[in-house]
Image 1 (cartoon, rainbow, N blue to C red):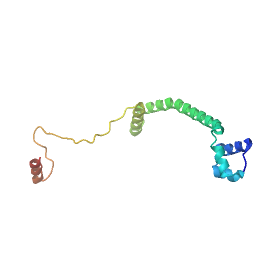
Image 2: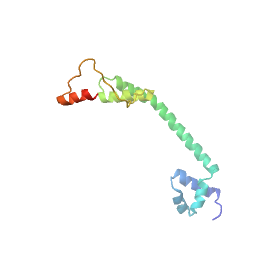
Image 3: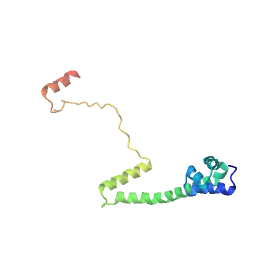
Length: 138
């Protein structure tokens, strides 16, 4: 099959980006070889307008998220201060606010903990012989 016309290339791009069809389906529908469809879809010059539109859509979405973030933060702060909100909701709101502010609770260190008693050891409810064994083995 020869080179595709500009119109056919545009149809391939439209089917792929606007209709969400896969290359194989486009080839089948338009009676083209899969190789021709892939050649059109890999042509960077043809893809540039779609890439630009995609980037613009991402920027618009980011602006929308950023505008909503302040409102969401205010709602969380309101939940935190509201005396009638369930405690679990208040705690989650506080944790989320702290997380977003970058305040993190340190993870547990996996170090051994040594406890020393200044006087006698407290009774731990173990049989007498185990308490004695513990003292003699340390």
